[in-house]
Length: 371
Ligand code: SAH
Image (cartoon, protein in one colour):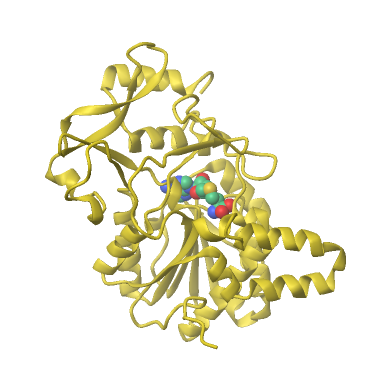
């Protein structure tokens, strides 16, 4: 889109009426002409935001070894399908497959499928994975990936960009928070509460913890895309055994409050100011995710803090082995380890959760440590 997605949105809202936050996010992230992921998506140090795989190759390496362990727990099936949702630059999968070279039988069995909506990022993934020991295929939707084999799914910072809806409590009822045109400035967007309260169908999508009473002024978020995603996973795991690992940021228990966040150039910016120019995410409600998965009959391990989980998988041992082999890298490895696992950085806010078919044992890294 030449110019600005914002003006397109202002025109659209003038004719169609205000948008739910989810519709706004979908346009701002995926509009074919100007959406952030469709046209801009700058990941990395010199871009808009840094994710764990971009902060340290050890992250993807440990997840690659976790996949090999999980595959062994499944009885080493050949073939096994490895799906990544929202692979970004493709660096995590490249690191995973490099680490998996320790197990040639796994590499012989694995069929890699990447699910990515952004054409630009898919190109970048192709470059990152050009020399991967297992060549991937690409789709834009999970339901287009064949469910013909036992499956491993991995997704880092994928759930946080699935669109959310927001609801505010007004006079004892929930009203949807939406994006409209600013009444004082017709060139700007503004958040507005819908005048009418929501009906029973919308009430059913709210996280269980908040369907009943909440104080006036409270704001809650719901992520409608989670339910069909879990239903697809459940269906897949009913055909063949499987395990899905999600890593993302958010609280272990459901919380109230507005967590919609726009990031550009590593800074928080106003989500309505320049849609399409910033990444938009919101915290993942892990308690609700686990609750929905259990109700579908999936086994749930976690959520566990990322730092605790990575240390259980051997992050410290891996960093020490690398530092011994390359002493000039010791300081950099220390910085990377802190970034991934320290509670002031990604270690506490980020969580890992694993959903499995019921016949599988507890996922690696989730067993209580006994000494
Ligand atoms: N996992 C990567 C990238 C995270 S950014 C990392 O950790 O570095 C989010 C990624 O999800 C991007 O690749 C984005 O294009 C992709 N994405 C967002 N919404 C998607 C959707 N609905 N389906 C598939 N991919 C999506």
